[in-house]
Length: 328
Length: 176
Image (cartoon, rainbow over all chains, first blue to last red; front, side, top):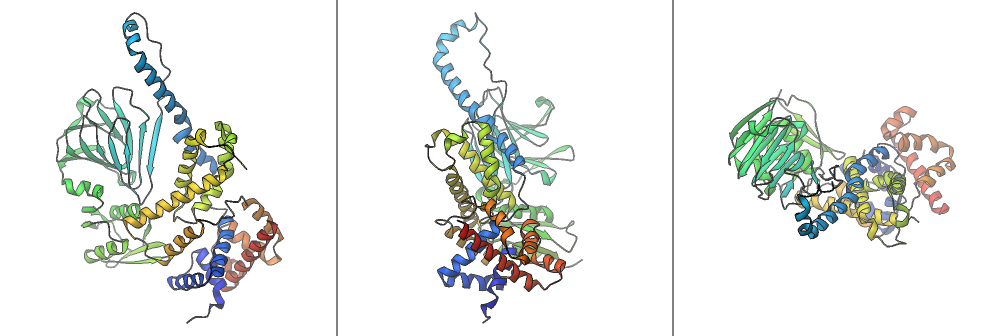
């Protein structure tokens, strides 16, 4: 049993993130031994954490992000709701006069948006002002107006979302994802548009959707039927038969991969488990992976499963995971 | 103590944001892994504060309120990760969870707005400390890099940093 006369080094190693698993176990035992030890460790760590001056973003940038997200929408959202209430009450009175006078123009020229950001390692479900439900996957973002007041109900997606759209024939629902617009009437579909994957995939489960490239006419778009999947990559749109279970399995919290590049697999695992994975030696470019994870699995179980078909070695060091390809 | 009367308009809120943002991110980093997750959590807390500002009673400490929100968001984040997959069944996360537990009732120096005063206290440390503290805390060098730079064994640097941080902790306690 090692003497803990080196507790001072041990503590600093753990704070510096250069401690081994053995070190951390010894430290943990020491911390748990007494209230005095516990206080010592956490109070030393607090001084350490308080003096971390580097690697924190400029608050100016954080403030700009904050302004975009809320301050400009917050106030106006209330304004919009009040105006609508007033309009409803006064509907009868104004109706008669509408054709005689010009309606005073309501100053809603600016569109106010709300944004939901889902960090890595989480999913989130949002209900939109019209009752549409969107489930967002890890590392995704949805931008939507605080109320739908135009002919078209439009939202903007980065990442992956599963949409159950409220039926409304008079007001088509449009998801803008990267260069593509997905236009629906009332339906269920999945859109995947992570910027790092260089392609946008739309899978239709129920109903009918039309896809067009942003900026082009909706009429010249591609129509999808249930069970079809459209992939937009390299400026081209192709339609295939979809395997619905595979595309939307993440909604039920499990993953299917079919001939997915190893790089993409790793990126998706990083997002899902909120962990940094470093690919070390080896050319991973030609490797594809097909498999299914039920997602109650730990990342270690997943890596073991991958090991069965792909010759990799992995190890964890200082909270990152390092992967090496074995055969060249 | 800042209370809700000091964040009535956006200009005031901006000052408040600037004054507390970075310390809040350092606080979130006690419990979560990544810088971007910590930043997102702090953003979310500020957004919530802004949206609730009309409903907050006077004399409530905004700082305490914000720290509590960040704490809870960090706790939620870790709970979500645990439910979905124990991706880190490692002692690393056990220590972080222990820390969450500790700070349920305890207050961090960050929470008590001591970061500026602590930075000043560094000048009062014994001679050998200035250098290592500067390299470790302000330049972000690892102990191995510092050891190489100063041409001493890593173990020596670890012990030296420990003693300096310990002294700093002592001074911080006294100066309270």
